[in-house]
Image 1 (cartoon, rainbow, N blue to C red):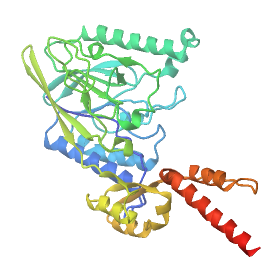
Image 2: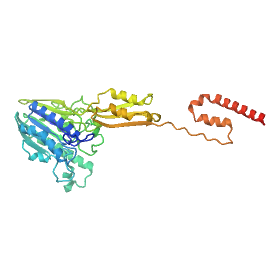
Image 3: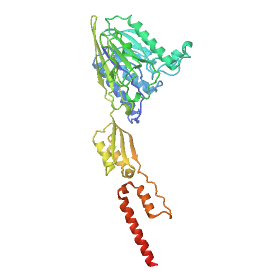
Amino acid sequence: MKLLHTADIHLGSNTYGRIDPETGLNTRLLDFQRCFEFMVQRGLDEDIDLFLFCGDAYRTADPTPTQQKVFAECLKPIADAGIPIVMVTGNHDHPVSFGKASAIDIFGYVSGDVHLFRKPDKALIQTRSGPLQLLALPWPIRSMLLSKEAFRKKSPHEIRDVIEQLYIHFIDTTVKTFDPALPTVLAGHFSVQGSDLAGSERTSLIAHEPKFLPGHLAPPPIDYVALGHIHRFQNRNRADDPGATRVVHAKDTPVVYCSSIERISFKEIDDRKGFVLVDIETDGAEKKTSYTFVDTPTRPFLSLYADARTHPDPTDRILQEIAKVDVTDAIVRVRYHIDEAQAAQVDARRIREALAPAFVIAAIERTVDPVERQRRTVLTREVSLHVAMERYIAQHDHLASLKDDLIEAALALEADYLAKRRDEE
């Protein structure tokens, strides 16, 4: 049985975009659409049995009609092919207010074999390759708990503990009802402890959100755990993954974050973006799971840095760094470092001309080291030349080694001057 696992599409993340003159749409929306269409076509080419979306369709819970239209158009070929679609709501899909519809609820009413999950649930989904047992764990909605009297006075930490206990109990009781011979998948949107975060998430994830261990999520007979919420591709049940916590089972069930399909910001500049193709092979009671990460055709992000402080021509130094890479159709950020005295030498026009092939110049940022300001030597008529020279030299480090010679020469000049004055008188 072949599955396509994706999440965190975040349509509407339009930073660094502009209006496309041919379509009137934001160019970044078109970037996300291109990656989405590539993913869908790859799924059709692979003849997948199920399209599995694990939350966060849009940037916000109130997407524009245009964003909803793009998402539906991208998903339509999957529905038209008769492939079941599973959609689990994520934290960006949920409105803040209790009782309001989520951003993806509408897909439960469109044509096609769509299975939408807003609450923990299980389902037996019929595919062309046979039935699939699904355990769905969408983003835990705090407002649903807080609407109950028993939970209203609990602290955020206590609410987190309650949610973790409820989810773990639900998993443990549900897997006991599954047929161990059938392909079985857990699909969820939440955090797993120790996950390697994408750069954009390091300051955005909530301290009191529920977190689970891989062992909580992968008890038999679960064959694959499909996750959304963390934007970096990783298997949390592999010891060779960065920061992974290895959990020993009869088999090492993959606990996978599939990543997002496009970069949101420069904080994700080094992250691979794509989706995961999953294959669950069954042979009687024996089952084997394999998966492959597929990169999407993302828009290149380039961040360039030039230290020009010791260069005689700071503009040339910056242009040297730009020349090292192909900026064509990329979103480019240039940062350079200069001394204050070099500021007037930087030719912004030449830098922008060198970046002309770029898709967008996100920023040209400079760091300037100020010229060290020397404290002015304060002298009065009553101060002797010897003292004056000592004070002056003390304010100029490069003269320190010449102190004695300079004072001696100054005093000699003073003596000559005074002798001449006496002779004239």
